[in-house]
Length: 116
Length: 115
Image 1: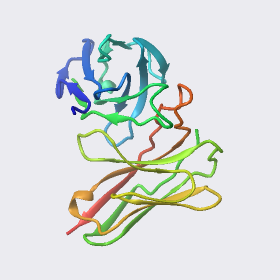
Image 2 (image 1 turned 30 degrees about the vertical axis):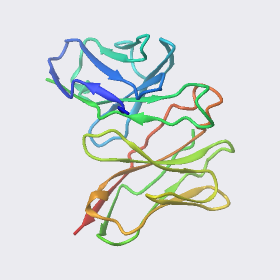
Image 3 (image 1 turned 60 degrees about the vertical axis):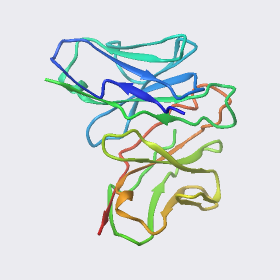
Image 4 (image 1 turned 45 degrees about the horizontal axis):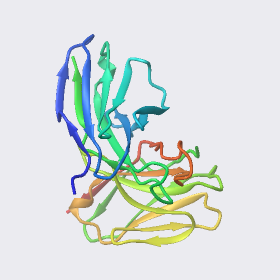
């Protein structure tokens, strides 16, 4: 049973460029959340997708956008990259409302983005 | 969401029992306490979760006093592979409504196991 997978593993971009990160949820999961983790900090919630719609959003600017596909996989797009966007980007998957008593989130290994 | 306070770092020797305490004075009635472990360059991994009293699984124990304003994660007989950052999270994680699954992480406790 494959867990959460993310690609690419590492990425180096230049300030002002755009980037797309990809996530495949754990088998049977239909909800994908994205987190940003700066060095030495805990993960910060960016947004969540369910049924191909953004359901919740954290305190991140509109430069951060996403998409969920019919197979539940998801993309995170960041436009006009800033140096401060350098971080580990984590994807977490879970089962939506009908999944059980508690939400159980499974995290992928992350994509390390470096903006120069 | 209840704010949590935990030590920034801890050191322990192999084979010892490690206890990491988390304070959450403003915990709400529907909040659960969940601990995650994170190794460098990996995503966080669920360790244990509880509401009150004591919970034990194959990895750790979680002690929660009656007032629920704090909790203690206990790792028995730690090894070098337990070196990681441990996060205490407090929130309503019941799968009744959307919004509950958003996790709020603090800065965690960096645990270093010494040989």
